[in-house]
Image (cartoon, rainbow, N blue to C red; front, side, top):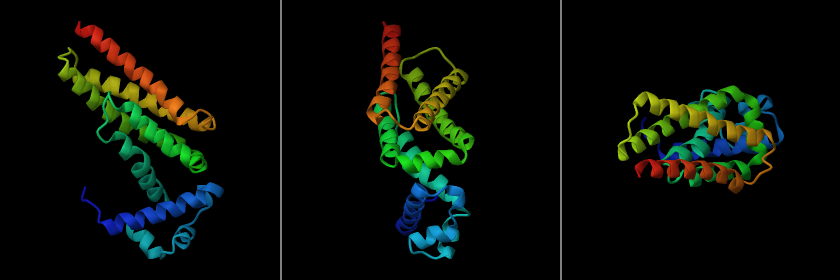
Length: 190
């Protein structure tokens, strides 16, 4: 994928910010491209130069604000901080994310799970190689899928439940799981 120019990224961020503001009080289905471009003082043509439709803008926003920072350089050692960052980002824009997840929950679950699965599979494969564990790439994929869907489920249940628990408390649950995995691994090495 070619790197986007700073101007392109700035324009996309401007449109994403407008969409976020509009979604706080309005259902996504009722928001038009004209409302988005009016809110950020851009032309409709500019919108269509960057995105095919509102869904592509929303996907871009979610990927750049949540998924990309979460998966970048993720490992078992830093999963807590990455997960906390993801939850904190969502918590700060609580109303937006609650509304965003109402749009098409199954697509979002599949998206988050798929990205998480890929990243966890890489992490598990790396751990297997570092610790000379007997396993296979197929087993790595199964573990990656398990953790990917589990993580997506935890996040989505939290959002559906009104985000009552703080991001720190939610992230501690993931830290507990990663610490248990490390402890199991350390015992196997003995």
